[in-house]
Image 1 (cartoon, rainbow, N blue to C red):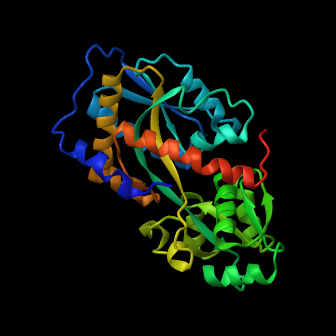
Image 2: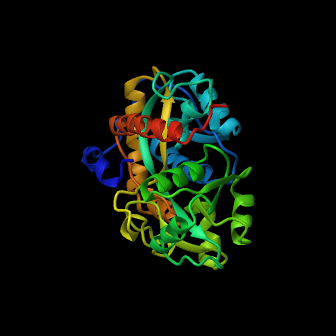
Image 3: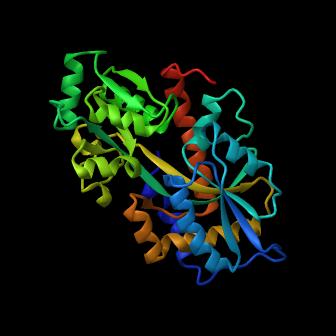
Length: 322
């Protein structure tokens, strides 16, 4: 997975740009930002923070429209079918790259149906265990799992969720084997881990942080390449004994294919400006986002690398397309 350093070059170009270069002939009063998840979740919160700032920058009202369902496929497909005029844009996350391997017919294609606008940032997952667990560190957990191969369990928000994939990656890198216990969403999964009925979970920071900070779960590490302040400065999995481990849920903005390049560049510059604005960064970092703006090309490279990265992991985990 790409990390902050891979976007420095692209961001540097935009920092040197003194003002937003507006697209010529771009018509319309409002811009619809499609969020393919329900209101109140992490993607929705990030989208609304960005939408508020680029509304002021572009002088055009950006209205958030939630279209949840089918693992984000409903919202993403609706964005792919919108007129490519710049008046409909999409905020997407890791499902944008992995759903083609999880669904036989998601109804859209990440490369052929969309043009990238800008990266927004990463949110890591947190590896956590019940307070009653004998493991007090990642190293202790790995040793515990190796002493009982195939017996320890991990919870996820469902087959193919970021929680599931993060755990699969962890098992592969740590060379351990655990049993997967999928749930319908993160909340019931967290409940059973807190109750000690499941041995661990790799949940998104924005969802699990209240339990970790509140002491109802024991956080062992964040899954990103660097520590995140919002996590209470938990160590990373990488510094805990698995030096190559890096997993984060990423967020980016996209437009329907064939949207004029000058329109995409105008929106991209506005998003990049938002990611450099102190008040916006503070809001995003408060909910656990490692903020990274980028030009369209950097996001395009990232998506292609994610596609190449996740296909063998999903196939290796024997996750069957729905």
